Length: 375
Image (cartoon, rainbow, N blue to C red; front, side, top):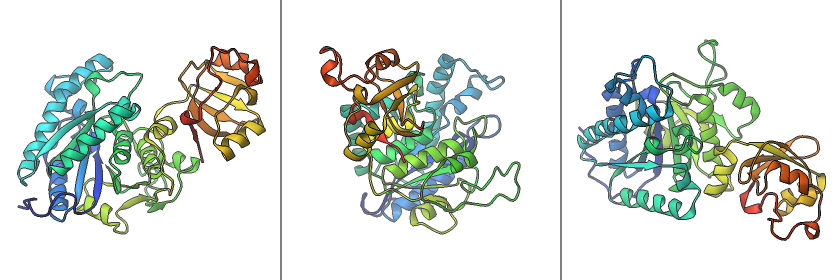
């Protein structure tokens, strides 16, 4: 058995490895210890050669359901699922600690919430905690804090959480483990001849269509959520790989860039801040603000805030601080941001110059610090 006591922590590369419920549990939703053992064995091998790894693991709710006798039918009440998560999380972490201890390693549970990536101080605290754990030689095991998460403000799936963690710690690579070889040209359940897409430079609408919808009943995210996570990673300057959890040495091969290991997403040269990543990819849009050509050009070319003078109209029923898409007169969306006014107020202010605005209201419809240009 490999014992990961050799090189000094931090000598090699830094990876975030996410594994989902469907890869960790059986058809009844019960944890498969051998799946966790396989992952931990690979992590131990990486530690021997000097790489550092953060594990992002789903499976808390899936692990808690059988213990509480709630597998059939699966509950849908958010409060019940949060309670189930509290039970399942302890079981899940216990499995990881037992597996890691066999290799002389120690796991450390880290539960994160979306606001940890939005508020600067919480962001810095989360980053410091993970860095110290890694410096101590600990393997952080990260999950969303489902037991106390607000249903209106949550990651939705651990793929996005893993992508944000990779940004948080400035990882070299994000590995998203799943039940297929990677992103395929079609759904293998209906297209037996579907082949692996080995490299993606830019995620577009066609690819998003190929990814399809949700995956298995045990998990909350299918290939579409992994594609979204890979997109977040790419915008963070992090290389992402979607690969099969049951492939031998899959994590090492993904880190090393072995050909055919899965689908590789090429990172972008420009790196967005965590707050702008959250706005761009993790918050759903509640409406649209349509602007004139002059405002669109100013936003794209000069990076300014959106003022009422450039607004044509607001569409949808959004409130203050809700996420909105920004579109030109042709209807094409080119940016996303947080609105400083509700939709009715935006329509009331549309077209007015700053000198004509009331002194006691924000003069920006979307401030530049809350605005992200989209490809």
